[in-house]
Length: 203
Image (tube, rainbow, N blue to C red; front, side, top):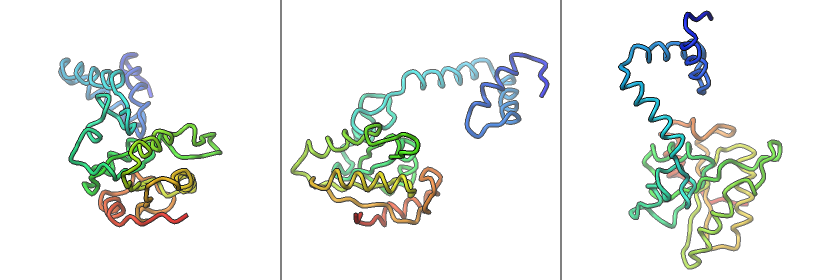
């Protein structure tokens, strides 16, 4: 594709780095920005820069946060003994969108995948165990909302082994989410029903 401006070409190359954005879409976005008011474009770029440089991870659940503790963990109205264990912060957003869960979260940061060189030590598992052992008198329920794949099932099995001696019950979301599917792509209704219809995890 020929460009009459190196500046436009650079902008297109930058926008095309975004997932799901091809060169044609990137060009449309770049030309759209050219026609916008300078203040709006500056605000757009500053918002992206500010997010990238100031975003934090919650010290409790590892979700994205503006502060040391995220809004979910700081919300005292939520059920503190229900913890939904997910792979990534994208899954937290997907579940929150359903409005069907009022507990807390724990973001593992992935799943166990020996093929990709990801073992338990690369995930936020120790901090999950710490959250439970700090309150030994409380009965916790861990809702394993992990994508139903071989790696996901392996991760759930590993966690169940690590938690077997603690005061915790483990449930998994109902298989309304298809096996092999990614949780973040499930529609809100299916995902919401899966949370409500969670089932006890059996080793």
